[in-house]
Image (cartoon, rainbow over all chains, first blue to last red; front, side, top):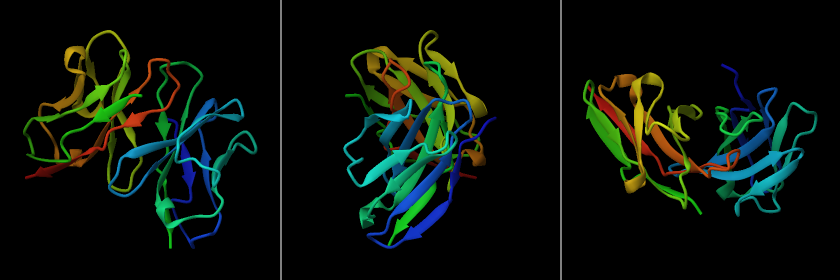
Amino acid sequence: EPEVTQTPSHQVTQMGQEVILRCVPISNHLYFYWYRQILGQKVEFLVSFYNNEISEKSEIFDDQFSVERPDGSNFTLKIRSTKLEDSAMYFCASRGRRINEKLFFGSGTQLSVL
Amino acid sequence: AQSVTQPDIHITVSEGASLELRCNYSYGATPYLFWYVQSPGQGLQLLLKYFSGDTLVQGIKGFEAEFKRSQSSFNLRKPSVHWSDAAEYFCAVESNFGNEKLTFGTGTRLTIIP
């Protein structure tokens, strides 16, 4: 089965630093997403991306967050100035072109902000 | 806005026993419904999904779920659990427009005892 790949699997950063989380979605997919899961809490939607622009974002996704698909294969999430409360597991997901298609999740990047 | 409730935070069952994990949703129409499993340190794996048609859906690893519109429920069942089923289980809902965000429940942690 095809896979969504996320790197790194674990990232540690100092508060106030910028981080970029990387994802390689499945190659023919068109819809891309970031979700996060704070330890012990539910998985929360952050942002969806289609046709090179954000299609929806949650309240969590404030000005400190941005997404980009720089080269047609990678899909990145940037946090400009990390806060302690940004510590979470971040999941990338992608989906094909048809409605009802399965959403594929990556294995996540554990971000620890110290 | 849609929402999902998983009333059981933690369930313990004996290996070989039957399992039912509860999920209730709130949505104005018939949503798309999903069950995901997350093993420790792993990403989210889709167990099964309901879009329309037969209200009893079969998934991977011997799991099934039944959509009950009158109860706004989508409970996950397995007739005989295996030690490898120990994991976190998430119910999720998506609006029936498709290709949109998932709203997850808070999850149910399943522990299997010998």
